[in-house]
Amino acid sequence: MIYLLRTLATSLSLQLVFFTIAAIYKTDKFTDLSYGLTFIIITILLVTINPSPSYPQFILAAIIIIWGMRLAAYLLIRIIKTGKDKRFDGIRENFLKFARFWFFQAIAVWVIMFPATFALSSRHISPNIITVALGSIVWLTGFVIETVSDNQKSKFKEKNPNGFIDSGLWKYSRHPNYFGEILIWWGIFIFSIPYLKGMTFLSIIGPLFITFLLLRVTGIPPLEKAYDKRYGKDKKYREYKRKTSLLVPMSPKKINNIY
Image (cartoon, rainbow, N blue to C red; front, side, top):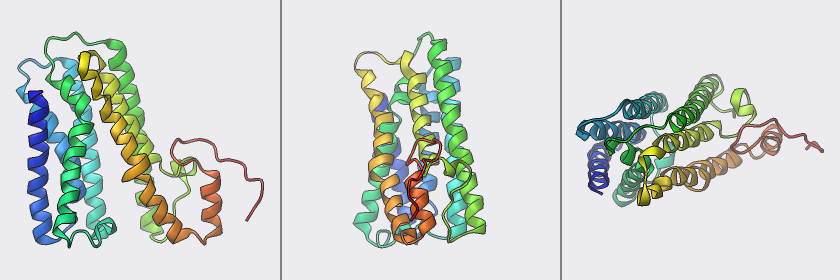
Protein backbone atom coordinates (compact mmCIF):
# COMPACT_ATOMS: atom_id res chain seq x y z
CA MET A 1 0.00 0.00 0.00
CA ILE A 2 2.85 2.39 0.78
CA TYR A 3 4.09 2.12 -2.78
CA LEU A 4 0.66 2.97 -4.17
CA LEU A 5 0.58 6.08 -1.99
CA ARG A 6 4.07 7.09 -3.13
CA THR A 7 3.26 6.65 -6.80
CA LEU A 8 -0.01 8.54 -6.37
CA ALA A 9 1.79 11.42 -4.66
CA THR A 10 4.43 11.45 -7.40
CA SER A 11 1.88 11.46 -10.20
CA LEU A 12 -0.18 14.22 -8.59
CA SER A 13 2.91 16.33 -7.86
CA LEU A 14 4.28 16.07 -11.39
CA GLN A 15 0.94 16.93 -12.97
CA LEU A 16 0.60 19.91 -10.63
CA VAL A 17 3.97 21.25 -11.75
CA PHE A 18 3.21 20.82 -15.44
CA PHE A 19 -0.33 22.13 -15.01
CA THR A 20 0.96 25.29 -13.37
CA ILE A 21 3.32 25.97 -16.29
CA ALA A 22 0.67 25.13 -18.90
CA ALA A 23 -1.97 27.28 -17.20
CA ILE A 24 0.31 30.29 -16.82
CA TYR A 25 1.52 30.25 -20.41
CA LYS A 26 -1.71 28.84 -21.94
CA THR A 27 0.34 26.23 -23.78
CA ASP A 28 -0.28 22.62 -24.83
CA LYS A 29 3.41 21.76 -25.19
CA PHE A 30 3.59 20.11 -21.75
CA THR A 31 0.24 18.31 -21.77
CA ASP A 32 1.09 15.11 -23.61
CA LEU A 33 4.81 15.36 -22.79
CA SER A 34 4.02 15.10 -19.08
CA TYR A 35 2.07 11.88 -19.64
CA GLY A 36 5.04 9.84 -20.82
CA LEU A 37 7.46 11.52 -18.42
CA THR A 38 5.30 10.67 -15.41
CA PHE A 39 5.47 6.95 -16.21
CA ILE A 40 9.24 7.22 -16.59
CA ILE A 41 9.77 9.05 -13.30
CA ILE A 42 7.49 6.72 -11.34
CA THR A 43 9.31 3.70 -12.79
CA ILE A 44 12.71 5.11 -11.86
CA LEU A 45 11.41 5.89 -8.36
CA LEU A 46 10.17 2.33 -7.83
CA VAL A 47 13.44 0.77 -8.98
CA THR A 48 15.45 3.19 -6.84
CA ILE A 49 13.59 2.50 -3.60
CA ASN A 50 13.71 -1.27 -4.13
CA PRO A 51 16.85 -2.38 -2.23
CA SER A 52 17.42 -5.48 -4.37
CA PRO A 53 15.76 -5.32 -7.81
CA SER A 54 16.14 -8.46 -9.92
CA TYR A 55 17.12 -8.65 -13.59
CA PRO A 56 13.49 -9.17 -14.71
CA GLN A 57 12.51 -6.08 -12.73
CA PHE A 58 15.23 -4.10 -14.52
CA ILE A 59 13.87 -5.42 -17.82
CA LEU A 60 10.34 -4.39 -16.85
CA ALA A 61 11.56 -0.93 -15.87
CA ALA A 62 13.49 -0.65 -19.13
CA ILE A 63 10.52 -1.46 -21.38
CA ILE A 64 8.32 1.08 -19.59
CA ILE A 65 11.02 3.75 -19.85
CA ILE A 66 11.63 2.96 -23.54
CA TRP A 67 7.91 3.23 -24.25
CA GLY A 68 7.62 6.46 -22.24
CA MET A 69 10.60 8.10 -23.94
CA ARG A 70 9.35 7.18 -27.41
CA LEU A 71 5.85 8.45 -26.72
CA ALA A 72 6.96 11.65 -24.99
CA ALA A 73 9.36 12.50 -27.82
CA TYR A 74 6.77 11.76 -30.50
CA LEU A 75 4.08 13.86 -28.84
CA LEU A 76 6.48 16.73 -28.14
CA ILE A 77 7.62 16.86 -31.77
CA ARG A 78 4.00 16.71 -32.92
CA ILE A 79 2.83 19.57 -30.71
CA ILE A 80 5.82 21.70 -31.71
CA LYS A 81 4.81 21.24 -35.35
CA THR A 82 1.10 21.88 -34.82
CA GLY A 83 1.47 24.62 -32.22
CA LYS A 84 -1.57 23.60 -30.20
CA ASP A 85 -3.86 20.69 -29.43
CA LYS A 86 -7.41 21.30 -30.68
CA ARG A 87 -8.76 19.04 -27.95
CA PHE A 88 -8.06 21.80 -25.44
CA ASP A 89 -9.74 24.64 -27.31
CA GLY A 90 -12.17 26.15 -24.82
CA ILE A 91 -10.58 24.15 -21.99
CA ARG A 92 -7.09 25.62 -21.48
CA GLU A 93 -8.72 29.03 -20.97
CA ASN A 94 -10.99 27.67 -18.23
CA PHE A 95 -8.98 27.11 -15.04
CA LEU A 96 -11.29 24.51 -13.48
CA LYS A 97 -11.78 22.49 -16.67
CA PHE A 98 -8.06 22.56 -17.38
CA ALA A 99 -7.23 21.55 -13.81
CA ARG A 100 -9.76 18.70 -14.03
CA PHE A 101 -7.96 17.29 -17.07
CA TRP A 102 -4.58 17.32 -15.29
CA PHE A 103 -6.05 15.72 -12.17
CA PHE A 104 -7.64 12.98 -14.28
CA GLN A 105 -4.33 12.41 -16.09
CA ALA A 106 -2.54 11.99 -12.75
CA ILE A 107 -5.07 9.39 -11.61
CA ALA A 108 -4.98 7.63 -14.99
CA VAL A 109 -1.19 7.22 -14.90
CA TRP A 110 -1.37 5.96 -11.32
CA VAL A 111 -4.03 3.35 -12.12
CA ILE A 112 -2.43 2.17 -15.37
CA MET A 113 0.83 1.61 -13.48
CA PHE A 114 -0.77 -0.69 -10.85
CA PRO A 115 0.73 -3.99 -12.16
CA ALA A 116 4.17 -2.46 -12.68
CA THR A 117 4.04 -0.76 -9.27
CA PHE A 118 3.54 -4.08 -7.49
CA ALA A 119 6.06 -5.87 -9.70
CA LEU A 120 8.83 -3.29 -9.37
CA SER A 121 8.40 -2.95 -5.61
CA SER A 122 8.36 -6.71 -4.90
CA ARG A 123 11.38 -8.39 -3.30
CA HIS A 124 12.93 -11.83 -3.42
CA ILE A 125 10.49 -13.35 -5.90
CA SER A 126 11.76 -15.81 -8.51
CA PRO A 127 10.84 -14.72 -12.05
CA ASN A 128 8.74 -16.94 -14.28
CA ILE A 129 10.43 -17.34 -17.66
CA ILE A 130 7.09 -18.04 -19.37
CA THR A 131 5.38 -14.84 -18.23
CA VAL A 132 8.56 -12.82 -18.78
CA ALA A 133 8.85 -14.12 -22.35
CA LEU A 134 5.14 -13.90 -23.17
CA GLY A 135 4.78 -10.46 -21.60
CA SER A 136 7.83 -9.21 -23.48
CA ILE A 137 6.51 -10.54 -26.80
CA VAL A 138 3.09 -8.94 -26.29
CA TRP A 139 4.75 -5.66 -25.24
CA LEU A 140 7.14 -5.69 -28.20
CA THR A 141 4.32 -6.42 -30.64
CA GLY A 142 2.33 -3.50 -29.28
CA PHE A 143 5.37 -1.22 -29.23
CA VAL A 144 6.20 -1.95 -32.87
CA ILE A 145 2.60 -1.48 -33.99
CA GLU A 146 2.24 1.81 -32.08
CA THR A 147 5.59 3.17 -33.27
CA VAL A 148 5.09 2.21 -36.92
CA SER A 149 1.51 3.49 -37.09
CA ASP A 150 2.46 6.79 -35.42
CA ASN A 151 5.33 7.29 -37.87
CA GLN A 152 3.13 6.40 -40.84
CA LYS A 153 0.48 8.91 -39.82
CA SER A 154 3.04 11.61 -39.07
CA LYS A 155 4.66 11.29 -42.50
CA PHE A 156 1.25 11.16 -44.20
CA LYS A 157 0.08 14.35 -42.47
CA GLU A 158 3.22 16.19 -43.53
CA LYS A 159 2.26 15.65 -47.17
CA ASN A 160 -1.53 15.58 -46.76
CA PRO A 161 -2.47 17.79 -43.78
CA ASN A 162 -6.14 17.81 -44.72
CA GLY A 163 -6.47 14.15 -45.67
CA PHE A 164 -7.17 10.95 -43.75
CA ILE A 165 -4.69 8.10 -43.80
CA ASP A 166 -5.81 4.74 -45.20
CA SER A 167 -2.45 3.20 -46.01
CA GLY A 168 0.13 1.14 -44.13
CA LEU A 169 -1.23 -0.29 -40.89
CA TRP A 170 -4.11 2.18 -41.21
CA LYS A 171 -5.39 0.12 -44.12
CA TYR A 172 -6.17 -2.69 -41.68
CA SER A 173 -7.30 -0.68 -38.64
CA ARG A 174 -8.71 2.82 -38.16
CA HIS A 175 -6.79 3.11 -34.88
CA PRO A 176 -3.73 0.80 -34.98
CA ASN A 177 -1.78 3.06 -32.62
CA TYR A 178 -4.37 2.51 -29.89
CA PHE A 179 -4.34 -1.23 -30.53
CA GLY A 180 -0.57 -1.14 -30.00
CA GLU A 181 -0.98 0.89 -26.81
CA ILE A 182 -3.45 -1.62 -25.40
CA LEU A 183 -1.11 -4.53 -26.20
CA ILE A 184 1.76 -2.74 -24.46
CA TRP A 185 -0.07 -2.55 -21.12
CA TRP A 186 -1.45 -6.08 -21.31
CA GLY A 187 2.10 -7.24 -22.01
CA ILE A 188 3.30 -5.40 -18.91
CA PHE A 189 0.53 -7.03 -16.86
CA ILE A 190 1.48 -10.51 -18.09
CA PHE A 191 5.13 -9.75 -17.28
CA SER A 192 4.08 -8.72 -13.75
CA ILE A 193 1.98 -11.79 -12.92
CA PRO A 194 4.67 -13.66 -10.90
CA TYR A 195 4.94 -10.63 -8.60
CA LEU A 196 1.20 -10.52 -7.91
CA LYS A 197 -0.56 -12.44 -5.18
CA GLY A 198 -3.83 -12.18 -3.30
CA MET A 199 -5.46 -8.77 -3.60
CA THR A 200 -2.67 -7.43 -5.77
CA PHE A 201 -4.14 -9.42 -8.67
CA LEU A 202 -6.76 -6.68 -8.71
CA SER A 203 -4.06 -4.61 -10.40
CA ILE A 204 -5.50 -6.06 -13.61
CA ILE A 205 -7.61 -2.92 -13.38
CA GLY A 206 -4.57 -1.17 -14.93
CA PRO A 207 -4.75 -2.72 -18.43
CA LEU A 208 -8.55 -2.87 -18.21
CA PHE A 209 -8.62 0.84 -17.44
CA ILE A 210 -6.41 1.92 -20.37
CA THR A 211 -8.41 -0.38 -22.66
CA PHE A 212 -11.67 1.21 -21.48
CA LEU A 213 -10.29 4.74 -21.83
CA LEU A 214 -9.14 4.23 -25.40
CA LEU A 215 -12.26 2.35 -26.51
CA ARG A 216 -14.92 4.37 -24.73
CA VAL A 217 -13.65 7.69 -23.40
CA THR A 218 -10.59 9.70 -24.43
CA GLY A 219 -9.30 7.68 -27.37
CA ILE A 220 -11.46 6.41 -30.19
CA PRO A 221 -14.86 8.12 -29.54
CA PRO A 222 -13.72 11.76 -29.88
CA LEU A 223 -11.52 10.94 -32.89
CA GLU A 224 -14.31 9.07 -34.67
CA LYS A 225 -16.63 11.99 -34.02
CA ALA A 226 -14.07 14.48 -35.35
CA TYR A 227 -13.34 12.37 -38.44
CA ASP A 228 -17.04 11.94 -39.20
CA LYS A 229 -17.53 15.70 -38.94
CA ARG A 230 -14.53 16.46 -41.14
CA TYR A 231 -14.71 13.69 -43.73
CA GLY A 232 -18.29 12.44 -43.42
CA LYS A 233 -19.28 13.75 -46.84
CA ASP A 234 -16.27 12.14 -48.49
CA LYS A 235 -17.32 8.98 -50.35
CA LYS A 236 -13.83 7.51 -50.01
CA TYR A 237 -13.86 8.04 -46.24
CA ARG A 238 -17.29 6.43 -45.83
CA GLU A 239 -16.07 3.44 -47.82
CA TYR A 240 -12.88 3.26 -45.75
CA LYS A 241 -14.83 3.41 -42.50
CA ARG A 242 -17.25 0.73 -43.63
CA LYS A 243 -14.64 -1.82 -44.66
CA THR A 244 -11.89 -1.14 -42.10
CA SER A 245 -11.70 -2.62 -38.61
CA LEU A 246 -12.15 -0.11 -35.81
CA LEU A 247 -9.26 -1.36 -33.65
CA VAL A 248 -7.80 -4.82 -34.28
CA PRO A 249 -5.88 -4.93 -37.60
CA MET A 250 -7.50 -7.31 -40.06
CA SER A 251 -8.10 -7.65 -43.79
CA PRO A 252 -10.47 -5.02 -45.20
CA LYS A 253 -14.04 -6.24 -45.46
CA LYS A 254 -15.66 -6.78 -48.83
CA ILE A 255 -18.22 -4.16 -49.75
CA ASN A 256 -21.42 -5.49 -51.27
CA ASN A 257 -22.60 -2.16 -52.54
CA ILE A 258 -20.78 0.99 -53.54
CA TYR A 259 -21.93 4.44 -52.51
